[in-house]
Length: 403
Image 1 (tube, helix red, strand yellow):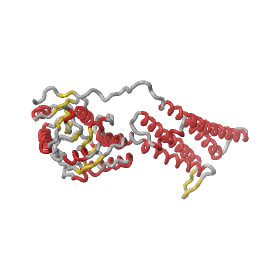
Image 2: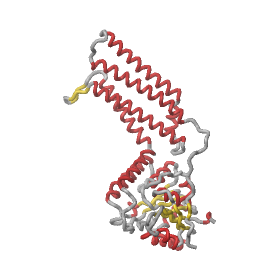
Image 3: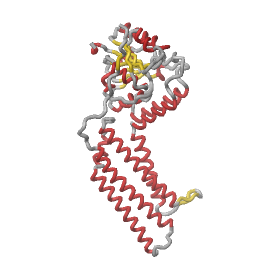
Image 4: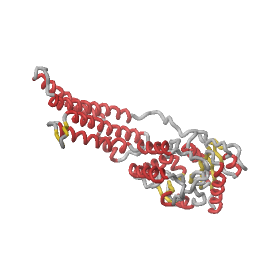
């Protein structure tokens, strides 16, 4: 019988008694007028304002989700849903449940995830704070498109539809508001078919402050985007820093320089060396993150990653790291011989440091690469144990429901 349900309309709920009833009636009206075999499911996250009683009275399925958080409530509702397709939306009156036909049509046409776009559909006056409309959403959505090449232009729209099995296969984990970004990012990474439809956003009718906290939740979204994009978090900044350091060292190794009356000498050379070391470590962190992500199935192993991984083997890392280490030690030995030539007396700091700084840089790079090769080999060890995590126990459906 559960397989006969085509569409589940899922509403996360935390003290939405003021607007929940109208949202349920609107969703039920859509199912009735469109002839869709479906259900209205309320994923309650611990309401104490009568929301649960309102849901039961109107005949909606009520599922209790004890784990607090927007993402927890939605994930619990999605797991409990019986439909082939799920359309989720907030039950605060900001979305029109009578206008779900475009979402269902795109899903029937083969889309895995259908995102609403409030910026093309229309945002009513007072429906979205200016901070979110002109800064938060545009910036985070733009970063998501750049980082992951996602087609979505409104990453955080609360109205979206999807194939239930496709989304559950993504193994979503985020318990908070960043769940919205996690769904889009993982769907994009896994190559799911994503579509967009314009949707309107109206002022909510809850009569109380939103559960959303602008700066806290904005940071959570940004943090998630960065953690899932090690290329932008580690590789690009590290590569630029490494190149800048190499250029600086090459420029200053022969002699000090004067530019516009400003002198650059061994102190600048030291910081250029530091840029080389920090940049190389950042690029190695990128490689660590990519190998771990591919191993755990978080991200697919792309062709560029496979090419790098095939070259950066344990043996290659040890040879390269060992060569740099020996070169650094040899250069350090030459610096000592230079000191010996002056009977271990006072040296020109400028001349001596032009040997010591490159020597130390090579030794650090050699150690980094050799130790990283061992660490990567540890990451690539396949465990013989099964997965330790799980998607958690299924949510508990409220025992008292309307007949």
